[in-house]
Amino acid sequence: MQGLQHRKAGSFPVRDGVASPIASLDKNILCNQYLLQRCMIFDIKRYSINDGPGIRVTVFFKGCPLNCAWCHNPESISTNVQKMYNRDKCMGCGGCVQFCPEQVCERTPEGIVTRRDRCSGCGRCADICPTRATEMSGRAATVEEIVEAVEKERIFFDQSGGGVTFSGGEPLLQPEFLISLLREFGSRSIHRAVDTTGFARTETLLEVAKHTDHFLYDIKLMDSTKHKKWTGVDNKKILNNLKALAETGASINIRVPLVKGVNDDIPNISRTASFVAALPGEKKKVNVLPYHNIMIAKHRKLGSSFSAQEMAEPTAEELENIINIFTEQGLAVQTGG
Image (cartoon, rainbow, N blue to C red; front, side, top):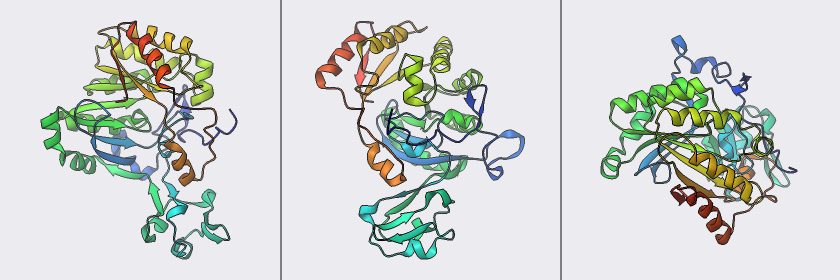
């Protein structure tokens, strides 16, 4: 998988095969009795129409235990605040060089460069950048801040049957904070969805399910060895957790990213369709999500090594054949969403 070692997964320590967020978060993010006062997010997207029913606000948590080669949001993988630099927008004023307290920014014949191994993520360079060539990805947010942002869009929820979706990254990496948010929005009668990789402790997932109205659950590959090659983890826990979640009667949409050369082969799609069709409860709706190379520009901004040579979008004919495999199992399928 040459060229795809673009970055390690989120920096949470691993215990019992699953990343553990509590031990790794900075002390000033924690409040008494283990409940998180703040969490790391990297975006709040308004008027989202692809992350659950209706018009929604999507809150993107920062940090993920997976490191999917095709990830559309590579800035979501690390739990740290990260600098994103767009050289095309840089006017070369040198303000970042002058004001960086760690002297991370340097002027070279090729332009401004960042010594990222020394960057603390303070954001001074972004604050003074006149063209927004430099931006910071990641910030600590409180429950109150997120509630205030979501409540501003309530009129759209009421008219469309929408709500709030927690995505990432992986929101289950910050479970106490996630549950606090889910409870708060439940008390406000706002529909709650969680978009998850499923890579978490089963007890964490099931506790989250008690406060969630709908899940968007990813299945990437059925073969465990291939899954580990392309995402950094095997899929045993993910598939077992999906079964456990389905047994609760939870509302679940299955999301299948389609990456040509990775998981679009007929054996994998057939195994995926059979697995989903056999899940307990009502037949699950499947969203197939064709690969897009939107992440390439983001990797450049992050300064991370990345190559998409082994990945491509399936053709229209290939996509139709894949959809037919799911429908033959009695599953409703939608492209995108």
